Structure formats: C-alpha cells, structure tokens
Amino acid sequence: MKALHVGNRLIDPPLIFAPMAGLSEAVLRKTVYSLGSLGLTVTELVPIEGLLRGRLKLSEYLSKDDLEFTSLQLSGSTPERFLEAGRMAVDYGARMIDVNMGCPVPKITKSGGGSALLREPAKARHIVEILSANLPVPVTAKIRSGWDEGSLNFADVGKALEDGGAAAITLHSRTRKAMYTGKADWKQIALLKKSVSVPVIGNGDITRPQEAKRMFDETGCDAVMIGRGAVKNPFIFKQTMEFLETGSYGEPGMDERLAFMKRHFEDLISSLEAGKALHYMKLFVGKFTRGMDHAASLRQSLSVVKTPFELLSLFNEWAEEQN
Ligand SMILES: Cc1cc2nc3c(=O)[nH]c(=O)nc-3n(C[C@H](O)[C@H](O)[C@H](O)COP(=O)(O)O)c2cc1C
Image 1: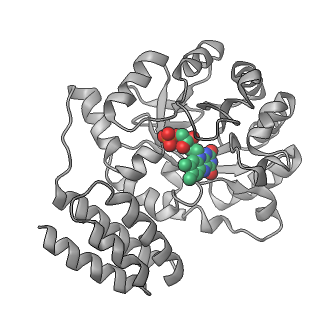
Image 2: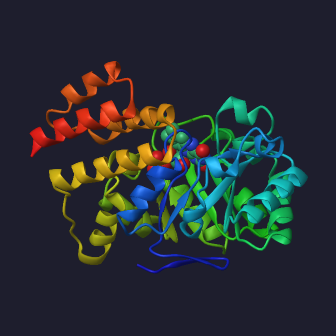
Image 3: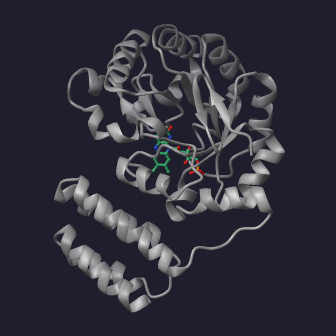
C-alpha cells in the first residue's frame, strides 16, 4: 500500500484514525497507534474561540509526545481567527492542521462552523488559504457531501479548497442533514477524487478490513479514515494492512484484547485526573467488550464503581476469569 504525502508529511500506511469528539482523546489515540499500521490520528475538533479566549488548552487535546503522528483539528468560522489559532497551534508544535467542515451539531453550525461552511465555499476556501499561506505546516479539510440531498456540492467545495491550498481533503460521504443515518455513499468519494488533484481521504462506515480495501478499490481514494469501527475494534488498522498485503487477516486472541484494554486503562489512570480517567474507562469498557462473551457482568458493575483503581481491579479480576 502506497504511503501518502500530504504537504511535507508522510502518512504511512495511508490508514487514519478519525477524529471523534468525546471518544478519540489523546490516550486512546496513542494506545491505538501503538498497535501499529496506523499512519495518522486526528484530534477531536478544537473550537478556535475557546482556544483564543483561554477557555481551552491545546495540551488537553494534543500531547507533545504525539505531534509526529497527529493532526490537530480546528473548528470555527472566521478566517482571521483561524489564523490566530493556527499560529498558536504551530507555536505549540502542531505539525498538521485539519479544518472541520463536517460537524453537523447545531452548537457548531449555528455560529457558521463545521458543516455550515459547506454552504459558503468562498469562505471555506478563504480559511484554508489564510492558513496555508501563513503557516509552515500542511493544512487539510474534512468535509461532508453537502448540507442536504438538494445541495450535494462536495465537488465544488473540494475544488475551492484545492484552489485555496488544501494539502488533502477528507470526505465523510453523508450530508449534514443525514447526521449519522443511512449509508455513506462512496460514489461521492470517487467523484471527488476525479474532481480534484490533491489527495482524497475516504471516510464513512468502514467496520472491516474488507470494506477498507473495497473503499480503496471502488473510489481510488489515497487513504481511508476509520472512526467508529476502530473504537469497537482498535485492531482494525493492523488487520487492514494484513488484508491489503496478503488477502487475509487474523483475529486478535482474547489475551491480546485484554492486554490492550489493560494497557489502555493503566495509561488513562496515569495520564488523566481521576474523574476523567474513570469517565473514559467506563466508556471504553462498553465499547471494547461489545460482543464479548461474559462481559455483561463487568458492564453491570460499572454503575457502582467510584474510582478508576476500583474499576481497574474489577477489570483485572474479570480478565483473570476469561483466561
Ligand atoms: C461521537 C462522534 C464524534 C465525532 N466527532 C468528530 C469531530 O470532532 N470532528 C470530525 O471531523 N468528525 C467527527 N466525527 C465524524 C467522524 O470523524 C467520521 O467522519 C464519521 O464517524 C464517519 O466515519 P466512521 O463510519 O468510520 O465512524 C464524529 C463522529 C462520532 C461518531
């Protein structure tokens, strides 16, 4: 599988962990990256106004240890404010910046950010232009296919972004209106690929290595991005690489899965304050154990757990019983 060049960055392999607010926090991104075969991770969207007003800190999203394999995603709506935030990000050490043009949530779109930018291609272009002309890092954008079915303007938006200097464009091929319903239409990714000459990253509904290969084959995209499928199965990148290279892939054994979870929980405990660590541990117990035999007892005990250590020892006891 060919590595992908995005400006001066190399994404090798061209498999990317999608940004997901509330899920793809720094500790998870790093643990998944450590499993291998992942070329890039992207932070959840960071609202630029929060950063510029001092309400949010870059260090909460992007660890200095992760700069090499992480792109920072910014959301907002004013080109000049983007530039201020972009400068702050580069001073912090960010090596790649992605502009969110796909978030469908009203909290973001009502102030003109996220997928609302799809309705203003000239402004979307201006944002990418001001960033890429003034910052020494590649600037990319992540879009949806349009605001609704009546305005599927991803190809025009893509061209505008390319003209503005975008180093790559990710398409989650659903409209803003569809939110997460229905199926992503991969034909739109193929169309975008034909419409622009910058790299296109395809995204939407990959849950198995076979589907990742199918997206490459059917759309001609330069990289694939996987979100929800990777939270359910963090081994998907490794499996996809194996599948692309050999035509088959193995399933991780129970011991490998449990070791992954244990490492992740220990990293959460050592990296975050107790309340946050517990929040994510509970969240990920639910995600990682879905479909596992005998996991119901572990999930049931979550409601009474008060500290991350208590949860870790419950998890360890449960894991012992599984071996
Ligand atoms: C809980 C959740 C949070 C998300 N947050 C972001 C975000 O912060 N920025 C972004 O560009 N996309 C966000 N997305 C969209 C994903 O990056 C991705 O485009 C979408 O989930 C489709 O890919 P998938 O089917 O592989 O999950 C989010 C998706 C989910 C489910």
